Length: 500
Image: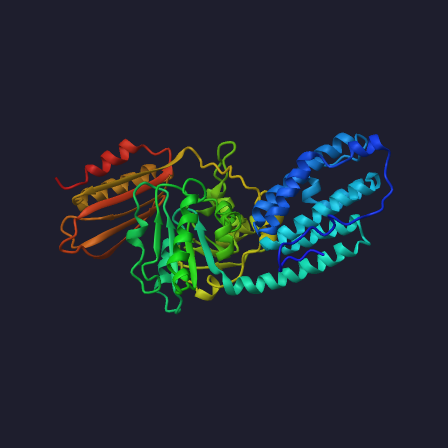
């Protein structure tokens, strides 16, 4: 039997003596598992024994790929199948080839499927684990060890779910395209009287950080546990920083007997949430200490359709589509900017076409009850694997649109309000289609308070953040994120607004 929750698990079939009828020597030799499969399965067994489940899945998948390649070579008359059907739809694949498998091949496949089931169960993909152990039993329906292994997998899933809820820090990913209202939501969470102690990991795409100025990081909710990651996207270039940040938070809090109630990761508006979510399974330390509670996607009701319809270069993913597809909950935000109920319904239909079952809540200014977004236990690895079978592959081929970039400006001094208004008005009118997001904290001549500037395409808003401190240098920080940006034009245009 395979014991997943006590000691080092052992494969359910390996090592047991069997008396089986053998095929002729030459044919048997051609049907032996390839060396690549045996090697990969050995590595997978070691990973399983040390609870490195993600690494084990990589190895066991490699074993199946090696087997499938060898199988096609040694069974030229086998029914046609698609590549990797052996992994994607194992029972359907077996139904096609079962009649030509000999006893040895059935034994090897059953052992491999059972091991994959244990690894997936360890990761939390319980439904998928049951599929794989079912495939093993389809090969050897009377095998008592496999039957026991199925019981152990099912029992381990229930036990693991309970233990996970208690032992791991719940983590929420807040994603959504540029300007959807992520930082506004984050401030609501930090200012809400919910009694929870929360840490924040914040990621900005541009080289000049603005969100840290807009975020209420002095809230008692965070107790200064705010980590900023700028000038790179959390799903690729600064993904290692995410892992380091999570480890740092755990050592500073739980490691010192002060556990957190939750962690919130705010991604850039250009992030693909899949690689961020994968981090919670791919890194051993993160997998052992953190639980992905849910992926919350904010959707800008006014602009989302044009971003969903944006044609990308070949090989480049549409981030807005990915953010909707991987969402466990969606906040359809900025509904007050939409002209009619019919238009909102059309937006919801577009969302449903991508993610049919996701709960959608309409909001304005990112206002939402905390029970809808925190402690929701909404993330399902089974759901993600079913939607994207490449999710558990240890590779990342996400490419950002090379036409999209950021231009940041950070200079001491003040802007002249009349000249700033004239330039911003011209800029948004002439370039607003290509400027996805612009935001800044500015020192304005004649104004005591900090001037907060925010725009999404051609929609502009401003507010005041509080006075500049007497000993604080008055300066201007602004960033533009968009397509085909002209750095020289933006920089020179803004500098002409500065007080001489």
